Length: 377
Image 1: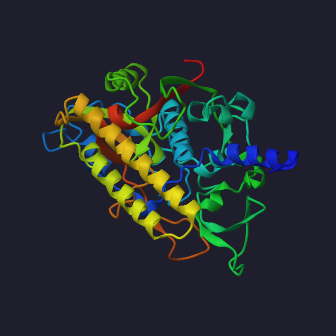
Image 2: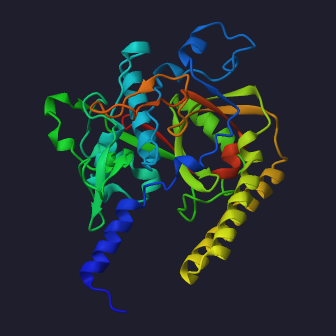
Image 3: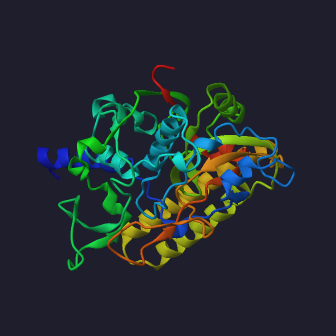
């Protein structure tokens, strides 16, 4: 079969454009968290008694963290996380706390990706995406370039804006990948400092799905980076079959837990594998059957690897948790976020401000970890 040069170029471009989009589906996400904390500021500001999950923890970074909108099926976790860390730094550097904190536009960072800003500085996209922001050193507030929902469709493989009456159009958060950032008034943009990133973990295969590859001291390494540099870290890991990115901004050695995420990993992966095998057995398409069986094998293998690593480290220690800010756990106790100011009914609660994840989560499922710092530090 012959492939034209034009077709090959389009294939390579498409691979580059969509590689950094997680295929996580909201319907497949299992929370498996130790605890979700929504009134974080109140917990932080009141006396840290034994009933407070923050008691005795490393809490220095809490005042500048902000919750994020629920990403739904946008596949935008990497950019929600990058924006969250830049947002943290802008609040920290300007000592903005409480209601004074600024809320930056995740959609703007997504537009930098869509427009391939700073592409020549991106070696490994899993660790280097902060350099896209350095290419412009500008960002918008969420109020001025809202993380939204809109009508979109694909034309020749490219996502474009559409309208409600277009039968081929879909409506949702994937609309945010379409860039309209050039329409933002220049006087609305904020200057950002130049940033660098320290790589704490990089998978030797540069595989964002890999598990059981992190060194056994990764928990101590991350804790040391948090305390020494007093800044959050960005983690890419395997969330029970999907790669995902989030922010770690503290830890607490005293949190008792039964490792809900890691303990449920293999059972859930086995469950997914069985479902895929059933699909393979029911389809009449040889190609689909091969695809389902291949995916089922990967689920089983990764579940087994996580379980083996879990057993290697002695199972659940029963104590210790990281503070995680995520974009896939909307909580009904959080404020409502209005995606589309021109519609009603599309609103969702913001994500929990803090999720507690057991230390074993990193040791078993993390594959890339970076810490973003101002370049002059």
